[in-house]
Length: 188
Image (cartoon, rainbow, N blue to C red):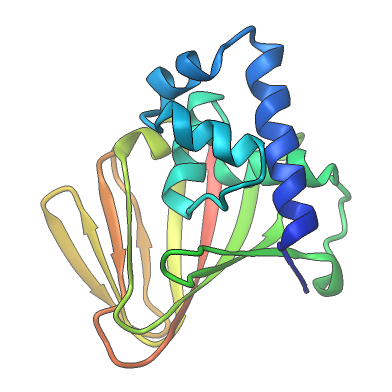
């Protein structure tokens, strides 16, 4: 498993720049579309700042991409066989959440992601993150609390939740142990 560090951070920065400029957008345009400050976008593109998962999701959504789609474009891969040794992972600098891209291809409607969420951590994502996808969350280890709009679900090992209409979502590990879960995403 490859962990995204300096080189992949640089690849993400280059990809963000390419996605932005290919659309003819300024950094201010991207800031307005994503809700990420122009200063943060500038620092990310210059590799002076490592973006969090929330920031990457907002930027990807502005480009009409999923987080996985953005990371895949940054990595430049798209093979049918996804070997464990080649699966890219990324650690959120704010929460230490670890995201491993198990499978993703631009020409395939499904993608599979595995997440390790440390004890006591939470990730909040806006409804816009789910505007063009449907997803299932399947917990393998530990306990995961999902707040989907006003609905709270507590999932234990083996439990699976299919998401409804796009709404703000919080993934929280309120326990004292790490949680590992998989997310199956389908583009709609």
